[in-house]
Image (tube, rainbow, N blue to C red; front, side, top):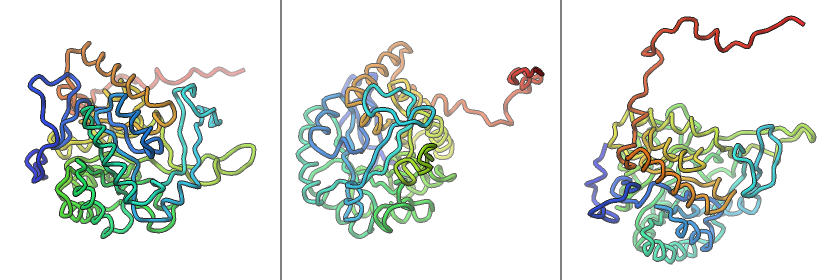
Length: 369
């Protein structure tokens, strides 16, 4: 695995002499805190980006782009629904219950690359003033064009790049619009090419639709990634009992609070495979500061929050930060001291102690009417 602290590009931000309890590092990048406003529709326009910066996010990943017209047009067909625990739609907004599942058909930034890049540069200037890292995000369509876009991102002065090769939609979208890479060898080839095109800190976003997430991450790091974001949402379908049709008509990208254990599992397994020097970004399942802490305990250096902010507004980021800071202060810990504690104490089933028919305690007593 490459040593991301000593890679070719210069550090992005320097640690203060007295770093705060919340400060963290993601490869070469210092973040003032581990809460990342991850890419979604609310980060398409400047108002949403400004709101995330003002809420105190350590980093903001702007809505992704690529050269595919089909991927842009899909945004015009996008639909979104919040489902309660009985799979019934609930009103979209801050009053939605906390245990919602979010199901969507999404699309990419609707404008051209030049407009996207100019906006990102302008937003980066505002982010710098608030000690926030603005991250450009490219989703793979054609590799040659992705590499050229990355070169232009670096030339424009942006400070970090997310390379998303783990969208949930590739099997459902127009062929070639986006990518869901499932083969470690292919991941290595793509990341190696991107690493050769840019010296920027490179965050590679991987799919969760695989049993090989740690292997995918290993391939990305070996090819030059500074950090890996895990893991992209899953595909799912919810049948409607009244119409007998799929909710929103098709398969959807599915996420929610219930995804947190899956994310933490992949974080912990990847840390066990690659060691604590592998910088991981957790995504999918975090709703608040305590969930951010849970992902850090599982091995994350930082945590992305996307759909919950789109649902409830950027104030969620501010509240998550306050809750995380209160939790760390109560434990007299820093983010770095918390990172990986649960992952490093995780044991296999064979290592657990025997219990005396403990299973019987969890069977509901049956009575004959």
